Image (cartoon, rainbow, N blue to C red; front, side, top):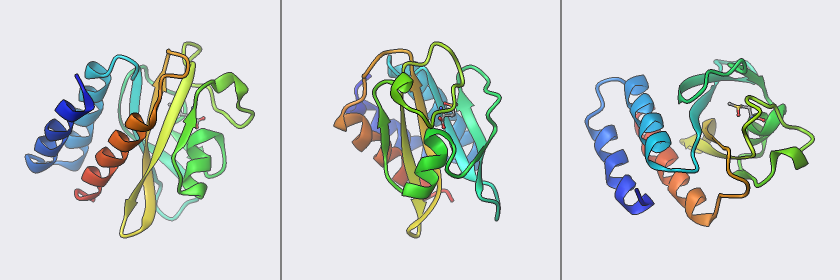
Length: 150
Ligand code: SME
């Protein structure tokens, strides 16, 4: 399914939302199912006042990394940089937390509410170097949509 077809589906999930976590789960499931190079899709959020991320809804193999300190791994770096992080080859990254040996690439896009970086969407792929500007723009749309639920 193309990003243009998926966008209104994301909007519909947000509009029909009865529970934030249920909507986030539906979005993770939709993206994992419909985008061939998305093999793990999850949300991490700032854990209260702590300088760490906590795993929220996700779709894919369970991960041990349910808490990630700020600065650690790709996710922890995005918590501090406030910028998208596209990793074409995870083996080339020193500061990377491996969740699954099949993962070849990753993209993390921060989620802002009132200008504050409160979390992120994280995608793992078992395809090498699959992410383009179109993925970044689509995931920014997803994060902006999700922000309206927060
Ligand atoms: N690879 C991430 C950790 C989270 S897992 O991909 C689910 C990182 O380096 O931060």
